[in-house]
Length: 342
Image (cartoon, rainbow, N blue to C red):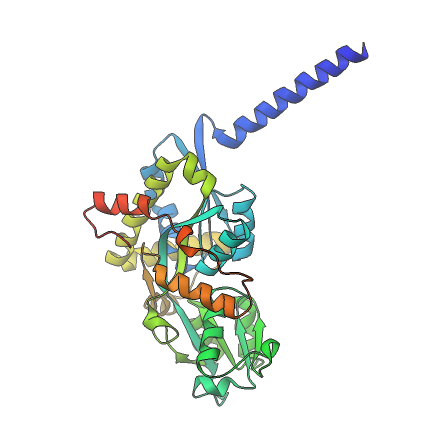
């Protein structure tokens, strides 16, 4: 009797497992692609594409998109490595960290946005040059993220160091909304932030721009957001990745050619995801500082690796050449008659 009950329990367990496995891969007979992005204008292709149906059209009726919204790179990377996300929009530095941590289980397959970060200082902070950051309180959104690495590079170029590295520049990791609150109270002297937060610090926080998007680094020709995919998903579903990238390229061109319509869709998405839209003047100003693209600017990502290593965020330098898989993107670009990305 006990043996018979055990066999029944085993069979029930097997049926349960098979059922669960099927649900993870299909929904009503459809394949699923789980996509992550931030509610941020630097992830504009994701926002516009979700709003106007470009991704759905490109993938076809047999594919369901499961949307996952994050507010921080490390959380998105954890989800990718845990198999909870297949493809995502994310900053290049978290992408590098995830690639290194996982020994190559993540790949960058395209760029998304270039530039878009500014160094803002308080009107009465007395800061007129980067060297004047000595002894000051400077905020970045997160330790080890793209803006933090950009700040570390600026400090090194000007002979400065953060307090944790033996210098006197106080660097604080604070979430963007809190940076605005602290800045308004004059509890911060400066901040290196992505748009639209730079514009908000100027218009709502009493700040002024010390270094614009094309002065922070590489004259603005650096990656701020990329498209990343799990190696497993890329190997198992190259067709879906190619279709997604085809839509991504189409959206990049749409945003460039139709900025007003794109901004309207982006703001509607921000309102739906965060319950807050951006005032038109802030959105307009911020949009002038970002460059939608599909080129990941591989040279800038390699430079990020060097700076991250020098700053102590990476214990060893990864082989960045293995981080990029650009053949699917270049296949799409060739089909559209566009120049391939190196």
